[in-house]
Amino acid sequence: MTNDAVLTVAEMRAAEAAAVAAGTSEWSLMQRAGQGAADYVWRIAAGRPVTVLCGPGNNGGDGYVVAEVLRTRGLDVTVVATVEPGTETATTARRNYRGAVQPSVAGLARPVMVDCLFGYGLSRPLEGDFAEVLARAAASHPCRIAVDVPSGVASDSGALLGEVPRFDLTLALGAWKQAHFLMPSLAVMGEKRLVPIGLDFPEDAARLAERPALSPPAADSHKYTRGLLAIVAGAMPGAATLAAQAALRSGAGYVKLLSEHSHPDAPAELVIEGGDLAKSLDDERIAAVLIGPGLGRDEAARARLCAVLETREPSVLDADALHLLGPDLLEGCDATRLLVTPHEGELAKLCDAFGIAGQGKLDRARALHESTGLAVLAKGPDTILIAAEGLRFFPQGSSWLSVAGTGDVLAGIAAARLAVHGDPALAAEEAVHLQHEAAAIAGAGLTSGQLAHAVQPAMERFL
Image (cartoon, rainbow, N blue to C red; front, side, top):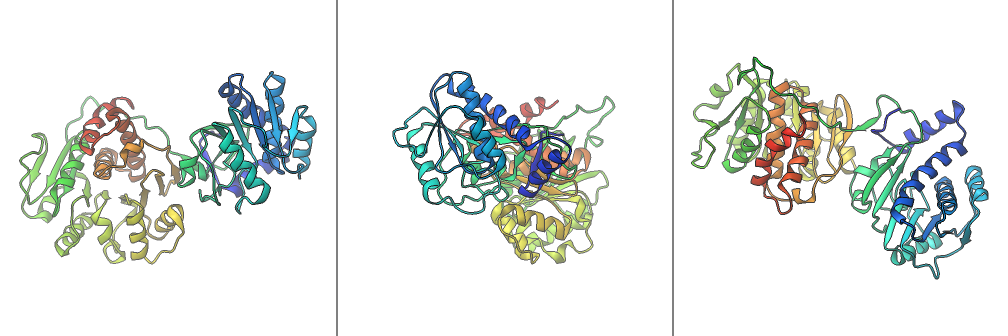
């Protein structure tokens, strides 16, 4: 049993079926889910009246359990159900509910609404009475809570199957679903909490990325044992310098910028080296390389990327490097030592370059990894990582990260962590958590430069 599994619809159904086969009744699972959800609703309602929307399936059954728990605690509760339950377990829940039921939201304008119309597994838009009830209830209830997933959300893809109102809280039942961490559904869910119900999950299930536990350098460390990171600059050196600013604060022992430009504003601790790139990269002390920020996309940029890939060092490929990368450049490389960090446009470009089809970020990232062996950190408000270790999801970071240069900062952090230990997937997980923590420290209206400087105090919070 784990609370960090992120399941598909098929995996969730299998987990529930396994629990029933092992002797736990479906009704017991529904009671656990409904009682756990009711605890959250009870605290949020704070004595105020509540409307619970119940659909015909087991999610509606969960709603009847929620409503009965709240009723027995003294709350004014009304269930709105346009149809009777359609499953045996939901019928049992309806029979055990002793409160008021009405077929529409007419006349109901209450502080709190709980959406239990449809849970995970929905594959078509809400229609007819269901769509009308949800829309009218959302308009007349200022505080909105979704149980499991908001009605109208596709659990595996995060797609919105029609009009879906915004919720203040979403309560995942039993396990997280993929839609809890994918756009566009992520944007309508508000805060998210998990209600465990005692299920077991497969070891190879996708999971939430673990909060990193960083360690200070060993007592006998020096700059090379802590990791020498080489950052390759290109046509637009500012982006590489920004990445270096973040890398300097992310734990590497030595950060070197390989650049043909002058950098009068660079920090004194950043070593800048010009001259022959291949010769500079031919340094056995280099532990990791970063290339891409500000690289350019011409033949000179391609030659610099080729030089990096020929080193066979663990590397982070970002930004312009992703527009140059293709099967020819990866030929002969150990792709398992490489981390790519595309946003959605760059991910689509990579998939085109490698002849990969896919619908949406998740499918494309998975297909790219499976085709190439690359560790793929598909970044954005719904960042995901897929590598040899499996699929990892991340809680959403600050929306203030939606500013130019934050991707360069993320690449710098990831490359520094890669120089420390050499594990691309671990470096990606650490980088996302560090970036999110740095954003919280930098605060509202942050710039990418402020974000880079906030990485050092963020590091302290993970030691």
